[in-house]
Image (cartoon, rainbow, N blue to C red; front, side, top):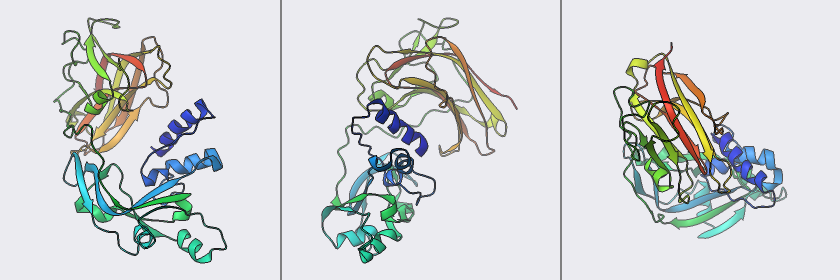
Length: 339
């Protein structure tokens, strides 16, 4: 994931080398060294951009914030955390001041400070999700001088103001594939048996059944963003089915797809056919997609993805995603067990 995140940033950097790019992500993603396991986005960017990449980590003493609830609460929720212990990065910073930015790559002659910054200390690592029942898991050790160029500390935080607080989206699970040729519907409405994420709707994307421009038969599906992008996100049309008939074997999804770029000067438009195996809680067990070879052709083309389903797979989700200012048509989908 972090390699792909870094690649997306580099696409913008290389599109306009004179521009300054600001990337907002969780601490574990902007960090430059893999104190959290795999190489983070910041590590890839530091390697590719050298001194042109400047990483800032965030720390806070206590307060409230919004996050997607886990274990067991779900949806966008508000959480509160108490003041950080003294033997943490936040606890140390709290003894210095209420709000400040500090360079953490200290000169070598500052032995005491450099030694502390170069040694491991616990830091809260809260990203998009949080769970009070597992709050201890969000403390991770890291070496500040290896992870960041600077750190911003705020003693107390307050939750952001949410523009849209939709209920947690639970995609319906069908007993078997349905409406794969998109001929159950009249034009203009959401294809029967298919879904599009609410956040994609907030971003301006729309999915509809159409009888125009289809490859075969009477119908096909169209995903587009006719207006201005309100929230930067991709638009994904998908279907979710029971994994029982496919469990333990290889499932293959085939479809024919074509893409039409908008006349608007928005870069990086493309589409992806994708497939995921999910456990009972919605966690991803296996994934396959055409992301390495995105769909960019205006001509109809046949594409396929496949993956082996683990024995504990509960659901299979598949579909097409469009990223950027483009329209994508989907037709003749098939889902089959091939092994």
